[in-house]
Structures are given as structure tokens and as C-alpha cells.
Length: 118
Image (tube, rainbow, N blue to C red; front, side, top):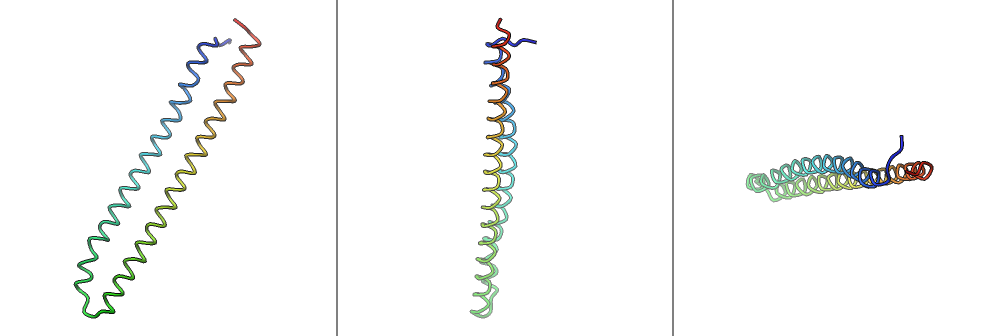
């Protein structure tokens, strides 16, 4: 089967772009859902802090509440940052794979076109 250069030049980029954009949208959706869950959790923790502090009877109790709050917050933000960097790394790797696949396919089709000029 021979492929016209014009058809290839138009369809191939659209196929790759569609495939890549679909995956990018899926990643964005998952990332957004995860981020909303994280923010909701952190806001609940933040909103609970004043009540916990008001229930303290001794200054050391308040210090313990603050220490636990900041320890948990630091841990949560560190974990969330690692997740986000992991998603960015994965997206970059997938983008490179798409570009490589597109280049290889383009090269193969161009060789075919050169071998069988219309």
C-alpha cells in the first residue's frame, strides 16, 4: 500500500496529537482529582486546629497540638510534592516516547514514499 505524501503529512500529526492529548487529559484529570482531595484534607486539618487548641488545658498541651499539626502538614505537603513531581516526570517520559514514535513512523513512511513515488 502506498501512502500519498499529502495524506501522511496531514493525518500522521493528527493521529499522534490526538493520542498524546488524550493521555495528557487523563493525567490532568487524575492529577486534579488528587490535588482536590489533598487540599480538602489539608483544609479540614487547618479548620480543626483552633478547636484542638481551645481544648488544651496546659501550655504544653498546646505546644503538642502545634507540633503534631506542623509535623503532619510537613509530611502531607512533602508527599504531595513527590506525587506531583512523579506525575510530571511520567508525563515528560511519555511525551518523549510519543515524539520518538512520531519520528520513527515519519521516517518509515517517507522511505516508503521515496521508494514508491506517485
